[in-house]
Length: 164
Image 1: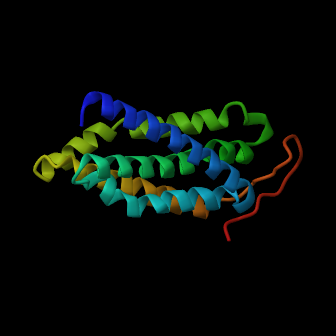
Image 2: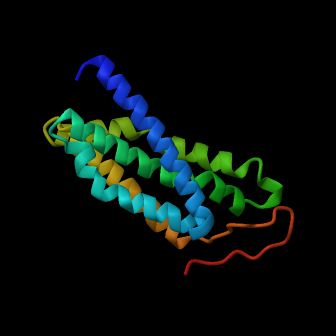
């Protein structure tokens, strides 16, 4: 694939993925934040082989697009979910702190992937699939065990619904 074709593919795919992320945000209004995060995270699992092991540039572009849709679908809803979970007194700090702690944990990602790839004979596809699959499962499990606060009225006393 030429650099121009690659750049065009990435730009178009990213734009469509952002659109689908907005769609997932809208769906989270109907289905609930937790449910949408779990659905998007788990739907990334069947996309993993196409994304990590594609045999052609066209399949790779399709896999990257579908993976980006799922990532935007899950991670695009998380900020709203965190804001709704935040106590009023910490709403300006809590979501950002949680995101930055996530970034701190993810900072080891490149080293972890390189180590996995070395273990598998330099195969970064395996490393990407293992890390992304593990994160998707962890996000789905932790989110499903949490509480839902969609539609909370900020500034009022509230009761959160526990995991069903």
